[in-house]
Image (cartoon, rainbow, N blue to C red; front, side):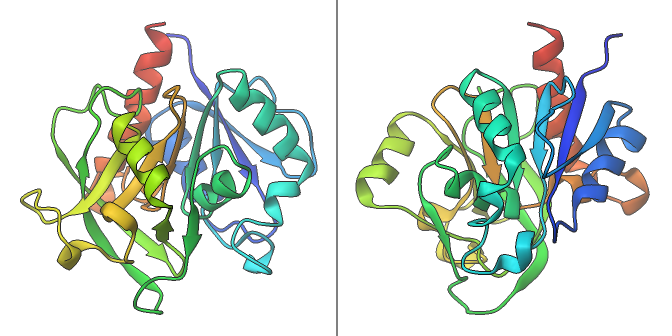
Length: 233
């Protein structure tokens, strides 16, 4: 079987790059390679992962400096040509700073760092990131201090109308309410995509719940869905 290659960008301060590499290569068996932020070669990657962490120490604003790393010119070009990009946690923040997804991230409503498992309700089951997942709810961990997704009403309406909201924080029974929102995100948004269904940004960490030895594997379903869609093109 042809292997889908994942390129995992490494910024100064990335701390989930090895988690992503381990999950997609060692656990799921896909080809994967690290991409240093100063390089401009995506090395024939089919999927780019912008991992979690604290790129450049989150100085100025989360993701704001990483957005100008040399490799981001190529990531942006790749994305605008229909390439698949997944931004996780800090990677989501970088996608927002780069203008590849709408909105911004602000500090958690609690003003505290949040680290726990959450339930995600799949809002769009037709995306390449979810269309092979056979259940409605995923159990995935979050770990962030600036995960409060904010956008103006016009942007939020557009996200709804174009079915760009992929994941929302919910109860274990799929109830959407403030009670189950770990950071104060508008509309309980945990993950969104672009209109073309090729760029996903999500605050929760699917790469941290892929290995059966950890007792949870829901994150693997997202990566498997992407690969299945690529192989069926």
